[in-house]
Image (cartoon, rainbow, N blue to C red; front, side, top):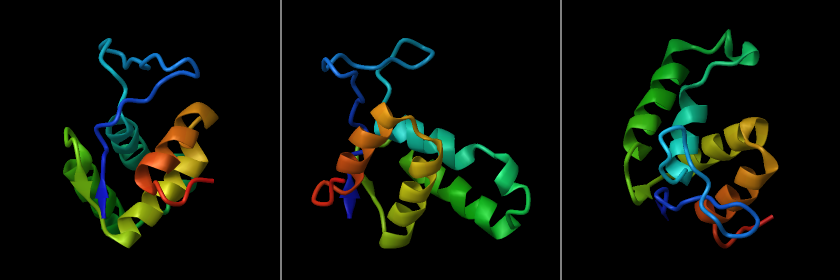
Length: 102
């Protein structure tokens, strides 16, 4: 499934959110960040799982649109649910699965 990871996230008034470099914060930038982050509950993650996250982050990084398989979408959704603030999560769910908005 093609996912428009280059879509900019906005505040509730429709103004682009900005990253630490004053550039629009995109769905892809957030996904890359949460895929590469390690949290306390990840301390027992296998090397294989770490590589899987790394490869997916590389695939998403800088892309405007990314072809993702179901397992990649599921992984992203799980991580988004754990680590995204509501403002980002609400928008990212509709970007990743536009037909399945919560």
